[in-house]
Amino acid sequence: MTTATSDPTGEVTELLQHLIRNACVNDGSPDSGQEGRSVDVLAAYLQGAGLDLERYESISGRSSLVARIEGSDPDAPSLLLMGHTDVVPVTLENWHRDPFGGELVDGYVWGRGAVDMLNETTSMAVAFKRLAQSGFTPRGTLIYLAVADEEALGIYGAEWLLQNRPEAVKADYVITEAGGFNMPLPSRSGPKLPVMVGEKGTFWASIVVKGTPGHGSMPFRTDNALVKAANVVQRLATYRPQTQIEGIWRRFVESLDVPDSLARLLLDADSLNAFCESEATDLGLARMVNAATHNTIAPTMGHGGIKTNVIPDRVELQIDIRTLPGETDADVISMLTEAIGADLMRDIEITPRGTNTASASKIDTPLWDSLARVSSALVPAAVTVPFIMVAATDARFFRRAGSVAYGYGLFSERISFKDFGSMFHGNNERIDQESLQLSEALWEGVARDFLIG
Ligand SMILES: [Zn+2]
Image: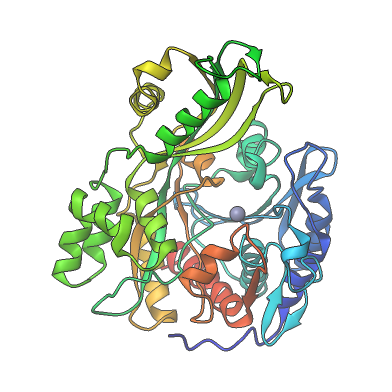
């Protein structure tokens, strides 16, 4: 599908290996991550290319790096390329290779962060340096941001920067993770590469289920909080939120160029749900399609009871809800009320633990056009299609600050949609060098097309 050769100079590979070995693992505690170590590596790499480099430290060890190439026309739109430097933890015994070894094996760089998203953070840095060294003089300003703390809500990274140093990072247009993987739907023309034009919101909540304590030896007709909690979990798991096929989803399906019968199926709520429930043979695809067209509810944790022989009077559940654009907190509460049912609602208390509404950017913008042009030049016959990111990224902070923000990237045929899905926060994360080279060419191409063209 591509004509690019595999990372001919090896610069992206080397930089990626270095960042993987730094193991900036973010477990959510304020002193984890320590991304300053990768900022050191990136700053050393970019030094001497005639760039303005600034580091910003939110708390000790948690710094982010900003590099910029000033534009000649203050009225021309600016572009920010943003990659995060932190990674999520690993389950060591499930890996076939050292997750922090950065080994290069058969053209793949192995390690945590290889697809989320040190591949982009490093290929953006290499593209940025090449542009600077080539004397790139854009009309609009180009900014590179290697940002801390994306994997734990951005408190010490993107959110902090926009609150405390907005002048350093604000841009009219932003590109960050993730997209560009080849969707496994049977298009009649070339590859369809998703650009994440929006992302779902999060609504995390705890549900306390109350009961009446008693002796474990006489359970008959007791008010057992654990039994009720099991019912709550069961109802949440089997509840089917309303299907929403307007907006981004409709534009996505209409741009896919799939056979008419499939397009009709994907734009009809009943047949789409039948496809997700049983007809789709690709489970990863079914989950993605379902998440892109529904609010989702995942019960994720449960704690309760005090002793084996005591009927429990209190169980606490944690739930992870993801919402589509346009959904309010009140909509979520009424969805939960319907899912759980009036009989059980009487005995529970729902407490929101953090909510973020969904965000979306316009699709028809000059940056969209640039991404489309550059992608089709790098990947023959490729067409960009709008999609919604089902997880959260730093893009939301920039959308709220008024930027148009997209999630994108490019991958070679060696990384399938299925591989991408399973490696994201999963085991045996790795990226091939052809994908790294494609990404580097993408960033360089988009900067030239968007800021000069
Ligand atoms: Zn990421």
